[in-house]
Image 1: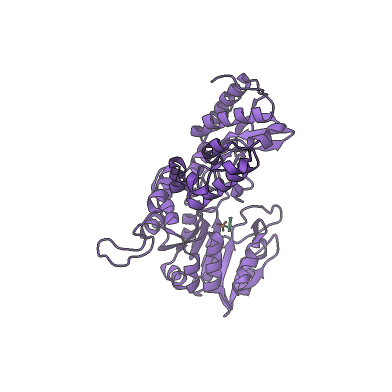
Image 2: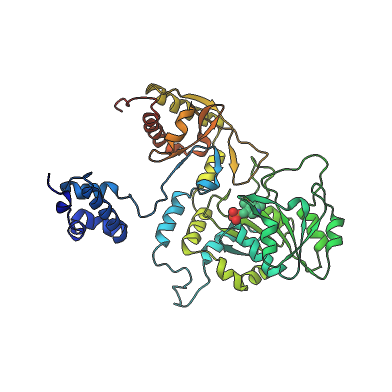
Length: 445
Ligand SMILES: *Cc1c(COP(=O)(O)O)cnc(C)c1O
């Protein structure tokens, strides 16, 4: 037998192949060269024939230079932090692609001089929340809290109710973040109750701000009391102490399905001086921290040196503007979907899968807002119940499908899937059924 090592094609010969040159333009030299070297090794090991080298390299290349691939979210959790939170609207995706090149994010094309950064996105925010005088966008809501705590609370006190010392998720505790900036926390009230008198007693010359944090992922029931923003604002009037409210979810206006979720407009109208929220929760936009409110305070934050470390890039500004100005983002669309429509889609999907011999049943399945929002307001939902053994194979098909296992069944919840994705979901589940060994092969479409 001849030594396969003698027939291994040279690296530069392979890289010069037109198909691989095309791949290099798209994916970059390093990625393609790595794939070439791995195939050369497989040729030496006798696993690949030398003549098949180019095909083997092409087959091993990823489709894009990033390994983050689309996933179908069938968890029924609309804003799933592990799945990238809010999916962007097509308009926002297009805005991101357009802004990704060179763009006048901080240049006035009329005068040729430096202009305000992200002016159009800020204008869109102010149009959406007329109660705000000014707006600022930072990396996320945690960054907004850090900026506020640093600029208003460093070496001073932030007054905060004990019942609002919130852990958001993955060990992220808001009090720890606030203290890490050099602010001192002045906790008031008890876990379940706080009164205006408690706040009043805490105010003094060291007070930097009074902070209200929406306990977005839990509720305290029974013998409870909190002080609404309007009462706090009235008590602080004339003291010069700012009232800052972290509302978390990023609702612009009250939402009929989510009566306990505070929104930016109402919270400012009730008298908060600043409101903070995430961009990628119920607003349905890119990851961002939104800061809106009194112009003088927003300006203080913008001028603080830390702002430079927290500001967002051009693609975020583009996506945010398109989310606010453009068509309804997917999160809002999913929230608005009616139960009858979801049930009809579930029946269609179940019938299609059952026709291929899969044990699939349409079921009602409650959904959730997620992202720590509206814990007390389960959303209605419907989906398809499959054998539990489907869960793992479904995560390995293209695109991967993420559902959940409940009562020994894999449930795919359609509340978090857009109707335009139903066909893709069906195809992916059929592929998953083959992997799961539930069907040997699929009937021709
Ligand atoms: C989600 C949330 C945060 C954290 O927001 P990020 O944008 O993830 O940093 C802060 N505060 C509240 C009340 C929240 O719900």
